[in-house]
Image: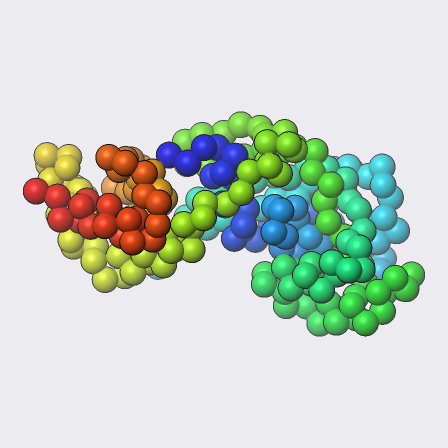
Length: 233
């Protein structure tokens, strides 16, 4: 299994901003996550964060979901807590791209074209204090250093592509392989998570982990390891 900081950063990298609170009160939420895992927010005039009170305690809830057939299930729920700070002008375009990936709001153009004007929409990011996480059967808290010093799984993009392909086209083969591993007929089987240390399979309502004999160091190694589960005898 990926180390917890790496798992949390991997989930955050593709998560959606689901909720924003300022000093405990709800506020409109539009945003994404930058390359360091910090929530990036588009804030409009009149909203609580627009005046940028540096003492305001901000919490951003991130959700990472998994689509299995017609059903959507939460992979991980994260609450990033900290303080808002202005995105530097040199980084504003990158921040806008991060927001647009999840919320294509036309106000982003205004925020860039009128950057720094008091009446313009603002791009803010979170100075992370701590991250509360709930993922699978694990929950806990990461301090800012552990979270920010970690990086997403380098094989995450390949893993998601392979996982989607298996769930779309090879579930019968996956079910047969899992059944052989368990020594009994498995119920409804989906590939849930895939990383360099192993695969997690959802069988009915349970999550079962199948570790690789040795960690995968490339996309090809990952596909080869998964093939061993699909074709296990």
